[in-house]
Length: 197
Image 1 (tube, rainbow, N blue to C red):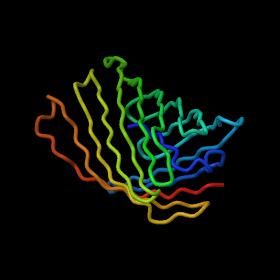
Image 2: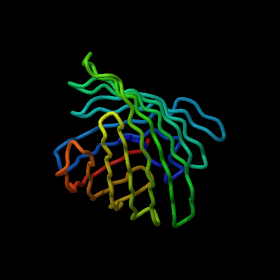
Image 3: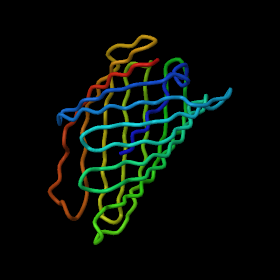
Image 4: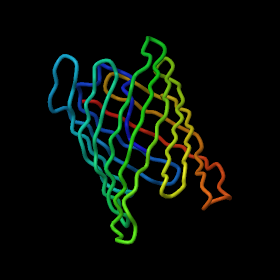
């Protein structure tokens, strides 16, 4: 899935961000977002991330109303490359409620000559209440593989101040495909520590 993070606190949009995540599979990832240009309504940032699953880099455009677009390229060991265009639309933002819809399309470019390039498309919704507790539901579909991936996640903010946020997420994911008829829901959880500069 794409790594688009909905803007839940617009005072942070113009600031640099560093993030470290760790999940129940033992995967640790680092990501960063660095503003490089802005006006009264939009902020253009350089984005990048690294983990055992690969590295990515690109650009993100955030709007003060909570909307965003990003374009990135990922290099994945033993697979090849992915190019992703993603967007986020803020549907509601009040003192208590924040609701976002997101969508993406990814061009998968395997390094194996016998495997053609293929696309993955997806989208989801993300909700937060009082910047403390929330949930998200994401779906991704890859026609070439006849595969649909579903991920449901509950989220809890454990600590927050103007420069730091510690979050916990727990949920389950499942893949649906005629090639994996015995798939089941797999539990997952993760911690995320964000620092704003």
